[in-house]
Image (cartoon, rainbow, N blue to C red):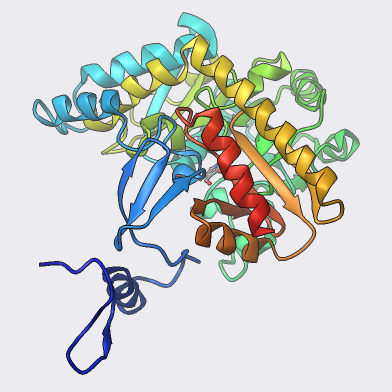
Length: 413
Ligand SMILES: Cc1ncc(COP(=O)(O)O)c(C=O)c1O
């Protein structure tokens, strides 16, 4: 039988708990590449999770903005289970229906019948697809062989593969992996003049997150995406939007760029798309998508039927208008509560930022300790950047639960 609590043996020695045993095993057997919180989670339901010793937590980070509908949502469980019992995997040598239905949904939201989807398994892969698309579009469709450089933004995060970590304009993620691939240059976020200075005959595209997630939940300044769109049009560049963390209704619209009144050439999706099952996507206009014809790109598992069936069920609920409206309203509630907290603790709370259910509270110091104390109070959140505590609640989280979460956060300051 598996023990769930620390227990004493006859000699009075306390035996390690189930969590302690698991964490000890992790220290010996896992690559030590993550800064993991010392919790072993074994069960989840909606906004709540339980650890291996039976402790319950309010989960306001949800796999880092991944379980959009919360843990084990019945509609997603039913869709994935039905698909598991029917057909698991055939690769992309054949068509499968869940992938095609999902493609219909995401392309309709992106730009109607004149757009295309490519499926992969993660955010980094979706961004790799964007990078390859941009280069091949310039080289093969636009006939601009010299255009291969991509402009990205300081504080961004686009993934951990060699190309996407190079697109990620944060030296801490790149250190030690040199030589990095060529063809990426960086501008300060929001600085249009700096971007203009970087544009030249070598530029292929601009890649940006509408809200920098890992960089500290920092929204792009008003008007900036529209200005980038204009610049791209002027110079024949592609505008690529990384919606990996912001996508699928989280901010109140299917994609966060839609708040800015622009149409990008291509976007990347992952995280919330499969509600926790691994699936990513690159969605682009047909004109641009012609750059990747048969044989130029692919993925064995990409758009796997089980992940795609889960994604389809997730999409229909997560992007329902009433759900997205509620996300926007809950975001306002969080912002209001955090600003009241800021007024009570001036100096300690520096700023509250975000949109809808992607939200960050910057504290003056000791953000990692705040996260640890939140956990002790029964709240799961994580760090984004050095000083920001990130909240990415499931859309099913109630307003009462969000309020409870902010109370636990205040106690942790
Ligand atoms: C904006 C953004 N892009 C890309 C990625 C990489 O996604 P993945 O970890 O699924 O490769 C992340 C992950 O945090 C992200 O936040």
